[in-house]
Amino acid sequence: MKSNHAYKYILVAILIVMLPMVLSAPKAMDAKHMQRHENDTKIVVLNYHKIDEMNIALSVYPKDFDEQMAYLKEEGYSTISPKEMIDNLENGVPLPEKPVIITFDDGYLDNYTNAYPILKKYGFTATIFVITDFIGTDPRFMNWDQVRELSKEGFTIGSHTMQHKSLTDLKEKDIRAELIGSNKALESQLGKKAEFFAYPTGTYNLRIAQIVKECGYKAAFTIKYGNVDQASNIYALERVPIFHTEQTFNNFCQRLQYTPLLERLGWIKI
Ligand SMILES: [Zn+2]
Image: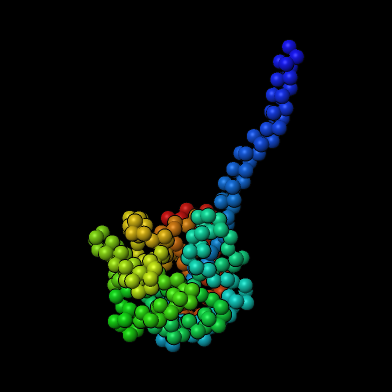
């Protein structure tokens, strides 16, 4: 009988010791789960095309671009790469307090001659989506030496296809050829695969987004207006386009701050 009692005491003692562990286990899981949902970082992805003196919407004057970069610096923004953005969204890797990704579409020569020195002045890097068939063949665009230099300086070079055709106009085999062919060219010229993609003319659908994923890209950017956050589709990421307007700087500041109404109301992103 005595030994029976002893077993009971031991059993109770074990239960008392284990109780906090049993109770805390689900809490720890909850905390981890909550953390992912509480990651409310908003990442601003700016979208530029040309930085030159042309008086068209797609060209931002170099002096205006300089003013915008100075403003970002003063306001405490830090440029991050798309890879850092994905690491944050998928694995919760922390980001600086005000993260911004500066993207350029098409890979115009002025990205190298005009934008690059200004970015360098403020210690910023950028992401450039290039059209691989235009590189080294059309003087309006950067050549491979320039693209390679930017890549070595920490810029992310992404694919913007081989020929800049709207993917919604193409057959599936041609979409795949554009996605794979541009990446092969980038890999052979830069020594590494392109991990990120931007849809030419911004046109896409969910089937095309799936093909982009199947072709090995880690994320894709649209021209859908908004900020990137936990609710974003990784293969249809939002951006904030910056244009030349009558009030370029004011519009830049507004676009940097503006949260679309539908997003505030809980609009589900696709
Ligand atoms: Zn483009």
